[in-house]
Length: 261
Image (cartoon, rainbow, N blue to C red; front, side, top):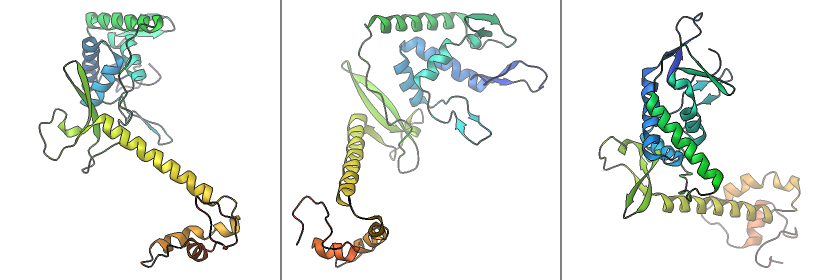
């Protein structure tokens, strides 16, 4: 069998035998994901729970050195995994399936239940009756705590209301740790979004300040700005700062307050 290897299987150790053999560690991950989807009936919930538990897609390293599969599962990957009959020992070609030479790693009844729920969810989406989705954990895979442990999205439900958090991954199934982080997701996401927004606004303002200055004058301004910021006697007067930066006082610089004569 050619192409990318599916999660749960490896190539046979004998290259001439073009068949798959079970990778038991990955196969258990596949079974866990099927059971979780059968429990939740939602790809979004499955994505959150998979990120919380920590399993990863199958790692692929290309000849160029580029890696695929070192991040958390995405909904598209999960849907492909759940809808693929290969885990039942079958091969799909176009719109037909055929018996494969590899063993099944999923119970047929569980696979049938999952397919029924996937089809029902797809029908709801087409009919426009799907319930409004809960917010995505858009910082997943992007944050770590002070020990370098990644922050994993999780949630609790109390009184019919869902509370989202980012927690140190070692707290997930690893017991209590006083040094572990548990941060409210909405507060953290607003703080990060605000910081990004302020950075972009500041960058735009800096660009507006130097608009129109010739490139020959800009060449050394960066280095002189760093040196100026280190001075204990940094002058507060703009004209003196401009002089130290090498910007002629007569140069038309745009600023929020009237420029000095």
